[in-house]
Image (tube, rainbow, N blue to C red; front, top):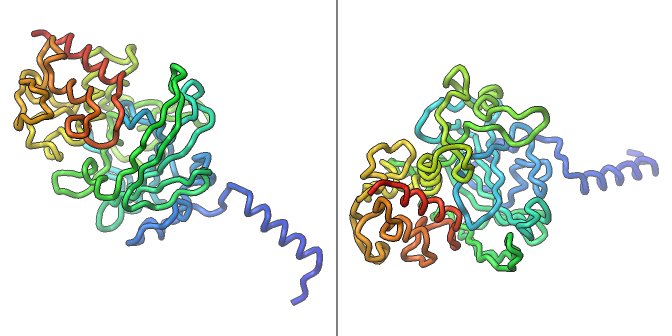
Length: 360
């Protein structure tokens, strides 16, 4: 076969363009998502056309939650992928949507260099994948390299030091904990002990979609339009919804505090979840005051109680175990047990005001 000089030049140019271009011609790697073993690197799944910029590939849809879980003030970028031709997730009002086999939930954790400029100099830390395989959901943590070019599977987890500047201008270093695969089960587990998604519930998804071309559209409406969600009210906006905890215009103090507890605690503290035996149910749908903590004595009173008698003492936040544990950095005391090393000051302030507002 004769190759002309012009042909060689064209071939070299094509290789150079392919090497520097962030755009992938192929779609998501469905075969790898279904495989029994995880990929060693995030890029192998082809979930992004430009992973460092978190630009999703075809059918990889960004989404947000009304009451996101606090994780040491990290930024989070969430995406959902459902393979073409798969059945939509059936509508249900209480639990997370049951996306079909071959689906994946993607969550990237990141930090800005300076929180006074939260949209600049973003450092990607880890991307967690929750992949629905034939045998059930599997969780895989991928840790980004220092240059933010590739994320590598870390089965055993990892500690990552992150230098940040807070809103007040104070420099700090966060010791960020990437969970190991077994720790993922500590939160993502159902009554049958199998791994389950916890965030994408109807009440959390009922909100405008993240910015994309065209006017904002309700997330539930959009997911139904593209075949990711089936059923539900004729107007998806009429579905149940929890308010944004720190948006005072989005609900009463009571509603916003219950929403915060729902997003940060109910993945364990709810019927059929890991902390079921405690009898402390912090999901938004729990209506029995004693079960969401009012004058409820703990099942096991150890060091975590701080010598206090009840989970929530109406009107007296300083005498409430719930607030005491939220306001601790002691690994043997603090709640949640996983996912944070820092105190969520805004969350503590919200729950303190909530408890103080309850009638004694």
